[in-house]
Length: 163
Ligand SMILES: [Zn+2]
Image (tube, rainbow, N blue to C red):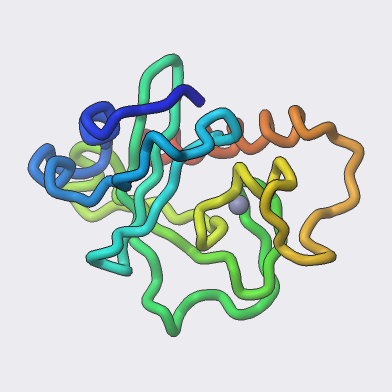
């Protein structure tokens, strides 16, 4: 994806208030992120471990989400699969929850997703980060096809949040 600035990221949040988007913590090392290898940029809030954020590009626009992470004790310890990049981890997948955008979110509606707890799906798909010997199903897809599928799964998740 194309590199984003802090300002672009703050303006991209779809499921929190403008005030929240202004205050939440955005990584300081944006210039050093491997943007070429990212389907999305995800990070945890260093000030509040129960929150994570994710920004991606859809239809040429940056779109970002606030996610709630489970408390440390509730992270999946059994083997499970990320529904975005389809990598299987031992204890490295979390159920993260996004409030829906707009009125539905204000009324308390939310959407959950099982996702790599370190939000590094893009790097697992490209083989830059390893999740262990049995992390990938044997499949004949090329790296490009897997990246496309990851982007498609992410777009579907954003669509559910915005629906
Ligand atoms: Zn993943």
